[in-house]
Amino acid sequence: MILIVLLDANIWVSAAAYPGGPPTVVVDLVRAGNVVSVTSEAILGQVYRALVKLHVSPEVLEETMVEMRSRSRIIVADFTLSVITAKESDNRILEIAVAGNADVIVPGDRRHLLPLGSYAGISIVTPADFLATYGADLP
Image (cartoon, rainbow, N blue to C red; front, side):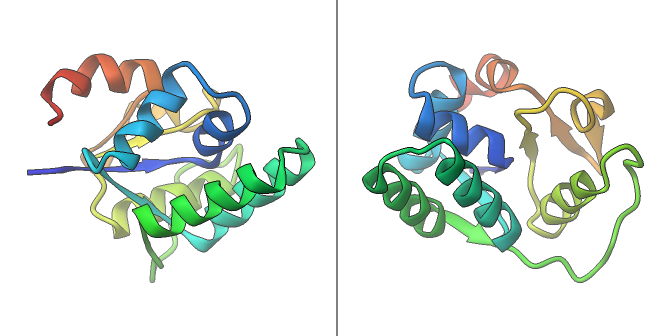
């Protein structure tokens, strides 16, 4: 069984704009096909806007967007969740993870999703914890 992961926008942005470190290694697992990525048009938009704001090269911007689209399942949730009150947009992450049958959510922001620990059987872990927990078991 292949692991299905939802990487939030911060993970993709970190891997593209600041290569190296756990976010890059996690994205490399997606690139290698060792895990399946699920995402949404909203997450794609967040990544695009963040990379433009960070003034990454046009090549890096294009490569990241092409990679996300070609290596991720684009999910549309047909339901709404209201689990996190402090940051409503993080509920969209949960919705995509649930609709996409994700096993794990890897957020870059530690404030809202990470404290949940899990939701609907989906683990929520840092990039480093993802690698420590699942890395050895991946092909």
